Image (cartoon, rainbow, N blue to C red; front, side, top):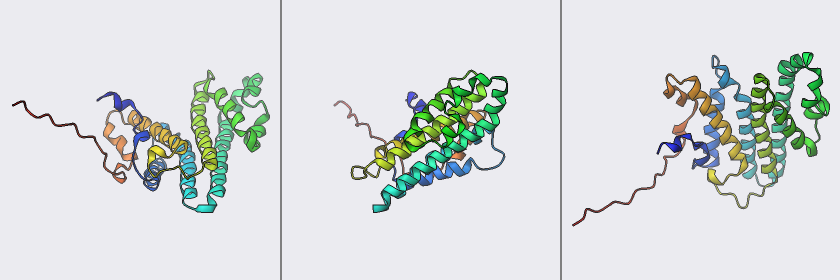
Length: 231
């Protein structure tokens, strides 16, 4: 009963693609409101990337012959989001850090900064993954935090590339069958859920304001078999 509260319930939702898109859009816009805690606003880029990749995939599945083109657009959008995060992290964190630790530059940029932000499509995934690993395993807390966001953006990029190559003939219109594009979005939503609970830990009911649960269909709970009294 209580163990399920620690599971990512966004992975278990049952709804149409369009409903999920509206649901996620509400949360994305909620994170853009002024005056929010930095822990919440820091998650907006990764949610935006996951949302963009997923919503592009949704429109691609409904547009017939335009699916391949839409998948490519989603991939390029996700790549642009990752590169933007790389550039921001470089200016705000890595360049100041490298002033005193110049020997570590190749750890983050083995192919220079441009080799990461302007990587050929065939090399993106390998270079993005190496960059994420370099950040998340670093001893500096701020750099590790930037790595956590980069990992979410990497997951969104992976989802976009998969959606662009996947045939829609076997896809069903329920969230549990929407594949890795949905999984990346669900993980980004869960990050917001956990952050909101922490930020509002003294009044946890306020965390609900970031999610439009009213847009989702009612949960289908399996009925327990009735036990007839013994004669």
